Amino acid sequence: AASWLPKGTTGQVTIHSNAPGALIVNSAVYFHDCTTPEVQAAYLSRGRSGVNDGLLVGSYNTFLGTTNDLVVQSFESLTTYPVVELLSPNGVLSQVVETLVGQATKRLSLSSALFGLTPNSYGIAAVQTFDNELTTTAVRVRELAGRVDFAIAIDFE
Image 1 (cartoon, rainbow, N blue to C red):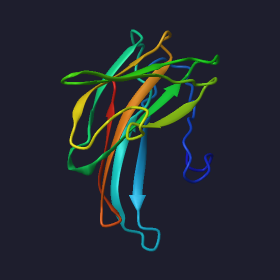
Image 2 (image 1 turned 90 degrees about the vertical axis):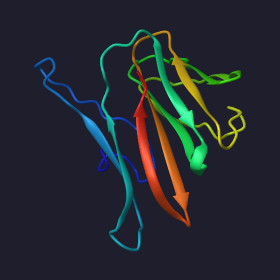
Image 3 (image 1 turned 60 degrees about the vertical axis):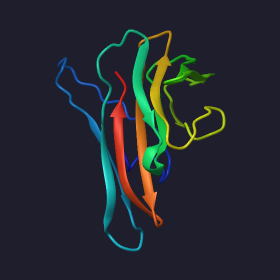
């Protein structure tokens, strides 16, 4: 996909097969120092999994100074309005309606004031959709001294 997407952007590639179940697709993301070929960190994210029931659930965790982003992908040709809800051990932190126009990918920073996350917190993140044409992955990244210490992707189920 890197040859089709401009550097630093997100997007999606659709691959079709005539044989059902014949494709297994993953993506790999690498963080590297641009002055050397050294890889600092990397993560894998699987391709679209099967049909969901309209509710995708995962987690957030801001301990160790990690940033938390949600990568939401729509495979629907029409506009869809997923609801992103964050729950802490004390209750609902936020409920935000997003807009994805057509087959789109949106990266949401849970660190933005819109979502109300604080440092050293954890909880449940849920994405409710009114169709089954959506995937969500949480991406956690920790930077130390200007370098990526680790990165992890967690697919919502």
